[in-house]
Image 1 (cartoon, one colour):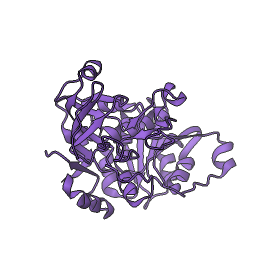
Image 2: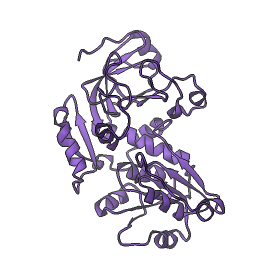
Image 3: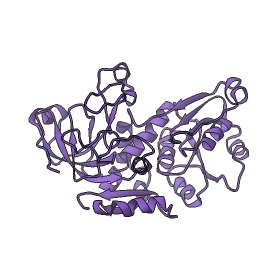
Image 4: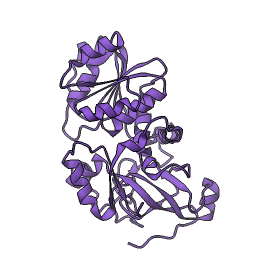
Length: 346
């Protein structure tokens, strides 16, 4: 495809890294959306390749600057965007036929000009409404590529109102779960993580978890009560399963907060016992969708370097080996954590 020349208020970035997310595999399988032909990839970072003069002045950017672009393209006009919840943008875009906000790499088809709307590409087109963040020049690309999943974690921490002294349980030691541990720890919380894969629980300890507990070998409620002297103030579910959601409600104290970040897919239903789990305990159930407002905190966390973020990147592939990259994830290799594509090389 031809690389477009940006108009006055646009820019084009050269993609240096793009993370492979489970959402990408769901797109390919047809579980979510139906926007084909599509350029996937929403966890991307890169450098400014070309930029219009007004855009450079307004954004404070120049060719060569390292940037992260949020996947969400808010309309900035609907009530949800105006109140700051642009992840819930209500625009009805006539070009794409969408009744929800546009998302780079997710739901803008290639048939919408100029077509380069995703990170699985050497170049990506950035329209005027995009939210662009300057990255530190000395932040390694492999670490910078974690900014989007860490932004998802940062939003979950904000939704749960996690603060100093809170007792937090994270369910699911995948990349989002481990990054949620780091964000909660940085907010001053005591953190426990629950899961089934021992190597991931061990990794979480290096990201600030006070304990990593196997759900195969332990009763979760007993361990939480013993460790915290009671139930958790906040439970963040990052496993993406109805069972994990039900467990989250079981592990939170009366009046506590449960944050749901894991996508369960179409058709999944979580059955809470209304009176016992919710009503008489008056717990807050707080879905946390995508990364709105999370990029700034995430970049600050990466720049501070409190935790060994580079450890999470376990596999890297050139763009032409994307099928192999997907196979590593689908095969659930024991050591796989975060897989990156390198569209334009190291």
